[in-house]
View 1 (cartoon, rainbow, N blue to C red):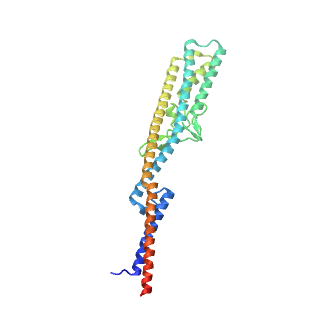
View 2: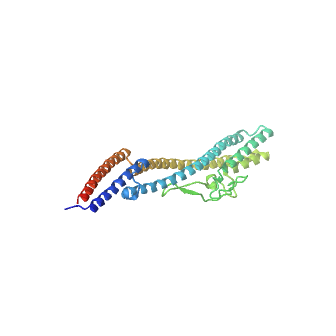
View 3: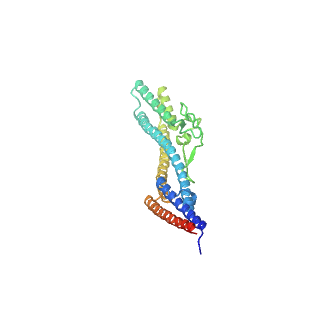
Amino acid sequence: MRISNNQFFGSFLKYDQVRQKNLDKYSNQISSGKRILSPSDDPVALAKSLKLKETNTQIENYLRNITSVQARQEAAETALSNIYDTAQDARVEIIRLLNHGVLDQEDADIVGDYLKGLKNYIIDQANTKVGNVYLFGGTKSDTEPFDTDGKYQGNDETQEVPVSQSYQVQSTFDGGEYLEASATQPIKIVEVLNRITQAIDNRDLSGITEQDLADFDEGMETIGKSRSLIGAQAANLEDFRLQYEAQKTLYNDMISKLEDANIAEAISKMEQSKVAYEASMAVFNQNKDLSLLKYFAA
């Protein structure tokens, strides 16, 4: 069966386009470093890669939330630690007053001023903020949660952010609960300090009793528990962060295996395509000349 010139040229053009396409594909893989250059290259691998990228995007959102919340929790835990340590110093003075009283009025004034300074510092720490956000005001985080008397001006709601599909953590805190206070009652340890400094100002140390120490210890216990609660949340967040970082690295490696080109393999295949293309051109030129000779000899 004789092959016509049109059939010959048609076949050549068809395979020439295939070889040119292969050369372009391998050249682009080498220059871009990517194996998948269009969806048709590997639809299954592309679908898997897109799913992994979607998961990674979600992980990155959780990591951003964790970073933001960790900064706030660290500041809140530090503030509660400062309050607790300051309360320890105040407790030493309370015990001294109960056991030994004061030497004279000058000594009483010094102790009173010292306890007032500790009280003001405690309130200042209770009004800790990160950026423009007051941490212990609940969702009312744009104004100071405690007034100068230590009374609570915030609310009992809290801002929460998701760090997984089923777990949210507080990014602001109910200061009334964490520091044992209300709109009518100051922070408990502040209330005790107010009673003691008032007794000193009235020059009546008999007003300072063991009940004051018991109330003060109760307030300190609440603050200690609140500090531990935030510390436990912070530990959970760190576990989530480490887990997400490991998952992100794993998924990036999987995406790389699905999408990235094997450069050595791509170079080898491009060289093979070049050889095949050059051989095809040589065959075409040879057959083209033979066909023309036959035409003129006819």
